[in-house]
Length: 183
Image 1 (tube, rainbow, N blue to C red):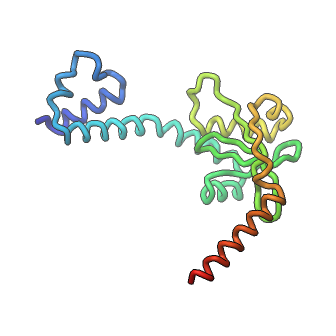
Image 2 (image 1 turned 180 degrees about the vertical axis):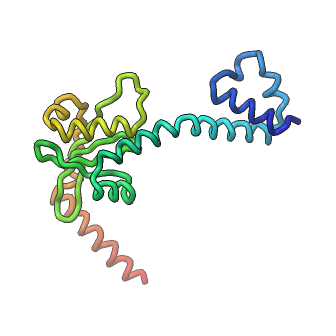
Image 3 (image 1 turned 120 degrees about the vertical axis):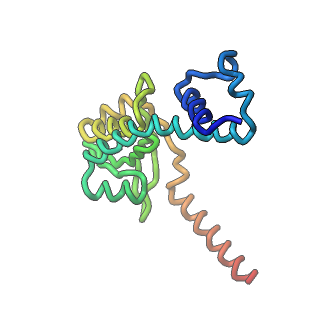
């Protein structure tokens, strides 16, 4: 049986990528652990890896929030995304937690995504909030340039068309009528 300190140290070595199960040195430590100690070790490893990556994302989120208006900060707290008007008048929804950006249009009371954009970090090392901040600044400063440079994924027009909305309303009325008959 290993002590808690030994299990934690092994987890830290896993998190720092200093120890691999397929490499012989140190494998005896892993083999000596019981199933419960292995589960704890893997849980500690996951915690250590998240602890190591979270500060960058938290710092990036603070920077992202500093560029927002008070209304947008409220949106971010409640909906996890922000609505932004571009320099050419387009409306965009930006999610700093996954780095996603969507061009949206309003139909009735709802906003519907028309196009998704992604403008990736070439090295893939930036936190998602930093990528989202890049999207935000480029959209505000030069929306046509953002559209030109970003990868564009057109959403299905069916999701916001009036014909689709009518079919959805008919199906909703049918479900309500069926529910009333069953009750």
